[in-house]
Amino acid sequence: MRLFFSGIRKLYRRPATFVTFGLLVGLIVLILILAGATASRTVGTGSASGQSSRAAIKDLLTFPGAYDRMLSVVVSIGGLFGMIYGAAIAGSEWSWGTLKSAVARGESRVRYMLLSYASIGLMIAIGIVVVFVIADVAAVASASLAGISTSGLSDTSTLSDLPERLLKGWVAVMEETALGFAIATLARSQLAGIGAGIAFYFGEGFASLLLPDIVKFMPFSVASAAVSTGSGSGLGGGASATASLPADQALVMVFVWLIGCLVVVSLFSDRAEITG
Amino acid sequence: MIGTGGVRMGGAGVSATSGAGGASGTDDLALATRGLRKSYGPRRALDGLDLSVPAGVVYGFLGPNGAGKTTTMRVLTGLIHADGGTVEVLGKPFRRGDRHRLFEVGALIESPTFYPYLSARANLRELAASGAPVPSKRIEELLDLVGLCDRANDKVQNYSMGMKQRLGIAAALLSDPKLLLLDEPANGLDPAGIVAMRDTLKTLASQGKTVFVSSHLLAEVQVMADVVGIIAAGKLVREGPLKELLSMQGVIKVRVRPNLVDGAIAALAPLAKAERLTETDRDEGWLSVHLGTNRAEEVNQKLAGAGIYASGLESGTDLEMLFLELTGGQGPSSSEGEFVGLGSPNGAQNGGAPAGKGTAA
Image (cartoon, rainbow over all chains, first blue to last red):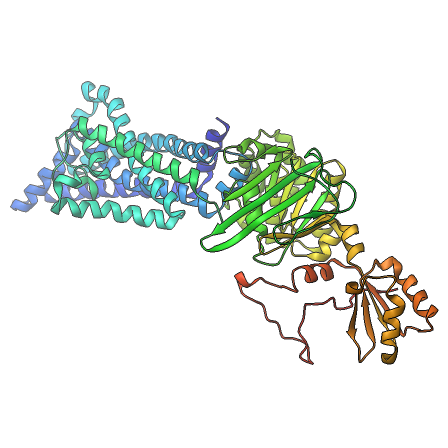
C-alpha cells in the first residue's frame, strides 16, 4: 500500500494531472456551450438544416437521455485523454529513470508498474465523476441557453442506474489508459507513447470506415460500445465506429484488452534491461 | 566459495592471489563476483570479471571509459542481468529474483534520477515508499547530512547538478545500507562538497559499512579508498589494498651520468629483478627502478657504494601511474573511441610508461 499511496501523491502533485483534467473539462464544456448557442440561434429559423441541427442538439441535451450522452462524451474524449495520461506516467518512469531508482532499492518492477497503473486508476475514477458532473451542469446550462426543457433531470430510474454506468465508463477509460501505458512502456518514452496512442486512436476511427468488422473489436471501439445504450452516439475518433459489438460483449473485450495490456507491461518491465 | 586475499593480478582469465590470506570463505566479503560476463550484441562489456570487495572498506573501482564499470554497477543492482557468472551480495547469492538482497544496498548509478516537479523532501519520501521501509526521520537526517535542508522544499528541476548529486547520495543512503554502490559520486560537486562526501564515505566505512565507488577521479580515489580494483576491457587487471599496490608499484627514477648507466644497473641489480630495472632514457642517464618509494635512500646508498653519484632522484607512487601502466595507458577504450589529445610539443605520446611524476625523495 505504501507504493500505491506514493503513486497517488505523485499524481496529485504532477502538472500533467491538472493539465489533462483541465483540457478535458474545457473541451467538453466548450462543445456543450457551443451546442446550446447553436441551438438558440436556430430557434425560429425555417431552414431544414437549422431544424435538423436543433433536433440533434435537443436530443443531446434533453434529460434524462442527456445523462447517457454525457457519459458517452466523457468516455470517448476522456478515453483519449486517459490514454495520453497513462502514456505520460508510464513513459516518464523510464525516461526520468525513477523506475531505475526503485529497482535498485530492491523494488519489484512488475509491482511498481502495476501499482503505478492502479494509482492512475483511482485518479481517473475521481476525474470521471467530477468531469461527468461538470458535463451535466454544462448540459443544463446549454439546454437553458437553447430553450430546451430540463424536466427529466431528476428521473429516478436513470439516476439509480448511473453508478453502474459510471463504473462501466471507468473500466472503459481504464482500458484505453492501459493501452497508452503499455505503448509508453514498450517505447520507454512519454512522447513516443503519447504519439503512438493518438495515432492508434485516430487510426482506429479511420479504419472503421474500411474494416468495420475488425475495428469493432479494437480497443477504442469496444470501450465506446461497452457504455453505449444504443440511444445515441458519442464523440471522438475511435468511438464513432459504424459497427459495434453489443454492450455485454464489448465489456468482455474491454477486459481482454485491459488485461492484455497489463500483461505486456508486466512481461516487458520484468525482462527489460534498464539502462541510461 | 569465493576467496579473499591480498593483491590479485588478473590475466588471461586467471586470478592469482598473493599476500596474506589466500583463499578463505566469503564471510569477510561484502561483495563478490566470479566470472561475470555480459555482452551487448557482439561487444563484450564484461569478460569474466572477478571482484572481491572486503566488508567495511572504501573500495575504489577504476577503469578507463568503456571498461565495464557502469555495466558492473547495473548488474550489481539488478538493472540488467549478466549472461554468466555469479554475484554474492553481503555473503549471499544475488540472482535474478533475489531483489530483497538490495534492501541492504544503497546505490547511485550514473546520474541521479528524480521527479523534477517534486521537492527534494518529497522525492526522498516517494523513493522511500519502494524497497525496504524507511523511518520518516531518516529523510530529515539525510537532508541535513547532504546540506539540503534549506532547499528541501524546492523543486528538483530547479537544482544545480551538484545539488542533484548530493540528493542522489542521500537517496542511496535512505535505507542505511550495509553496502553502498556509488557511480562517480563526485560528479558536479564543488570542492567543499567533494571533501564532505569523502569524509562521509570514510565515516561510513569506519562504522563497518562497505562503500564501493566507481570513479575516474584517480586522485580522489587515492585519498579515499582502502582497496582498489582496476578493470580493463571487462576484466579485472589488479585488485588489492591501495597501500600494497602502490608499494609494489612504486617507481624510483635515478639520473646518473650517461656513461655510468651500465655501472648503475649493475649496482642496483641486487635491489630489483632485471625486469623491474629499466633504462628510461640512456642518453640522459635516466633509470627506473620499480621499488617501494620508501627504498629511495637504499637506492642512493647502493649507487654511492659503487662510486656513482646520482644527479637526480625522484620517486612516484600515485595511482595514476599504476592505472596507466595496468590499462596500457588507455584513456578512453577503443569501444568508446579514443581521445587522441594534442600530444607534447616534441611529439612524444602520452601514457605508456610512468612519467616520473612524484615527489622528490
